[in-house]
Image (cartoon, rainbow, N blue to C red; front, side):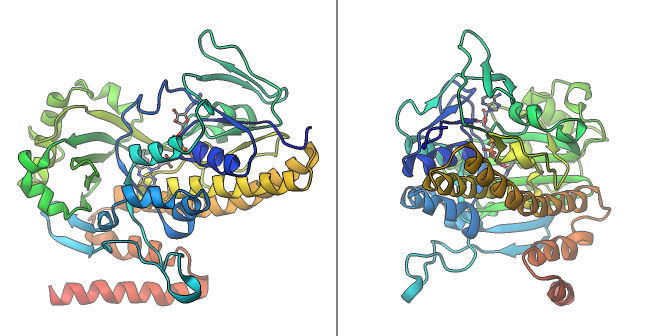
Length: 435
Ligand SMILES: Cc1cc2nc3c(=O)[nH]c(=O)nc-3n(C[C@H](O)[C@H](O)[C@H](O)COP(=O)(O)OP(=O)(O)OC[C@H]3O[C@@H](n4cnc5c(N)ncnc54)[C@H](O)[C@@H]3O)c2cc1C
């Protein structure tokens, strides 16, 4: 192996782009192969909240924090959890801007912050930070030969080989993972939850009452086995997610109507005796009835929390390819960006040690040994929250203590957890007493 390794990254999502950016900054040549034909090929819908010690730390390390600040929405952190009658069970106001430390901590973020950014904006910042040509758009990996490290693509694109390291950042249905994680444990399974991604493009005109209810942040409204989420987007639109418990992962093909036809979906969700949102507050129902444009049915999938595999020389995984989890913990992209940051650090270290393949492999193994328990812990949290929110009876009231305590206890040592759980219980008891 030459002293500077040849690195291929599969997938120009947040994880792949961040890794490429960090390696580029360190002067390590990298090539990214991406299925999509251009950065804005597919609607990059939805908003992501980035956290201080993970997503935001990676952006800082990549020298992209100023660009992030220009696009981020700190007030997008405003969160409300309600029931289907709009009764508020929890409301947390976000800061209006980022908060930095002072003195020796100047320039560093103070306390945990969770600003929102539109997924499309995050991709724009990351892709624009890479030199032209570093991302090879329109390269859909069809097959990966992990022994020879040969990449075969769809269409007339010639195969590529000769890489010292191939990093699978190719998301939920990773072809790189399929080549190194054998058997069923490498296959995503349905979380038992599915629904629709909808949008209200101009709520200022079409739904001002929803816009003011959202308070520039997010509303998560719940009833048993149902969630309706509304989120403010940076372009002024509202994104609306409707989630339902789904016993059949192929529900979208078997539901008896066209699950991509917005009019038919509205009808199925709102009208008729058994429609799931029939008895919901008119304000919440209007988030569905006022949706326009695309209607994207989606089943949520996950990999087994804590998935590991036998290390394979010259290959590894980052992001959803390594640890796909449900979005209920709101951590997927943060873990993905941490992976990129940690793997880049290991690669830079190996190159600094004049690394041959053995040194590079040792560094990649170190990344994997750190990533497995770190991501596994988050995946367990996401799994637990999915089950609480979507499978328990009497939601949201019945799960407020358990879900809030799960978040609060996430980083707490085990011996403090009974105390913090008691404090959370006390908080909700107090709220219940004062009405
Ligand atoms: C509905 C929903 C809401 C979410 N909300 C949040 C949230 O609020 N907070 C949060 O932290 N996370 C959230 N997530 C999770 C988050 O989106 C993912 O964890 C994150 O996008 C992972 O980044 P990634 O780069 O690993 O994968 P991806 O974003 O999936 O990117 C993978 C890239 O690889 C490309 N690719 C795939 N296959 C191939 C191939 N064969 N050849 C070449 N290229 C390929 C894809 O086109 C894509 O560009 C949410 C997820 C969903 C589904």
